[in-house]
Amino acid sequence: MARTKRSTGVQPQLNDRETTALQSHIEDWEKASGKEQQLIFKAAAREAKVLAPKMDKELLKERKYTYRQWFHNHKKVQTNSKAPTKPKKKWTARRVIEEEHKAEILQQIREEIEEETGEKPAHKEVLRRYQPTMMAIMHRLDKRELQEAEAKADKWTNQAPDAAVQAKTARKKGEKMVKNFAKEMFTQASMRVFVLGSWKDEKGGAAYIWSVGRFDFNEQLGKGSSFMKGKDWQAILPVWEEFIGDAFDHDQDQDTTLLGGTQRVPKPYHEFKLDRSGSPMLPEMDDLSLETKKAMIRSFLTIHYRTCCGKPKVPVPWSDIMKGQSKFISSTYLPDDTKILEPSKMLHTDANATLDFWWD
Image (cartoon, rainbow, N blue to C red):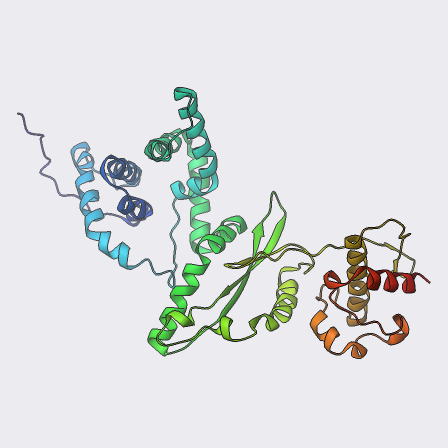
């Protein structure tokens, strides 16, 4: 069998752009095996070759051996350096395209398989076709599109990714990042931490909800006990929500998600018509459901509380009101012997009595 002719020239060292391109594939390459791993390597090599320094055809053809050696040399480094406490993530044009269009690409592959076979595509087959499809997309990019993707990659690396990408990172990797931070602080500084974190999260189009992550890994470190299991940590949530509402310019009565725990279901809120002074006007209340009446009481008290505080987005401290009602609202504005509860806990008779009194 004839041997492949090898160039006698010297391979130039890999430049930064080549290594960045290879780095963007190594995590997927490590997770894969067999033919899928080969496809990922070919995609990485083809992308890196476009970024290689000038050399003769034979050297460029043999560049794949240099890339393969780089993959094997960096496999362990990549595995051990996954700790997201030092998250200087380098973006490439390919990764930007993939991030922005991955859902569409996967859907396209599924539709193609279903059209060919008439059956629901298997997950393994979708993954098998993914890398070749990405390669085809990258090859179809014209010069302008490639430059735009490269400019965005540079911006995302040196400044910050778009808000939607940040939200996705917080949602999918936030817990792991904080866990690594907590472990590092305990190991290196014998410090224990409890973390509250909030971020804006997409909710269709330009709409956002804001999410709260609470992270307590103390039970997993040394002989520590859980802060959340042993203490009333939710007592600090109202103050945090007020702070984050100001920071994100967000109304606390809107949707909120609690990461890693129970969904914080938004309480019903009633929209009132306002009089000339900006005060809410109670409507006719015949045939209204109890839930609607509760929502009206919540909204009525919230509007007046915020007006008195001079803070248009501050949450109402219902637990504090229940402990010391007279500090917040004069008995003049309530029926005799009425105790204000968090509106969702009010009974039909209490809700009717309160609304009838305000109406009169």
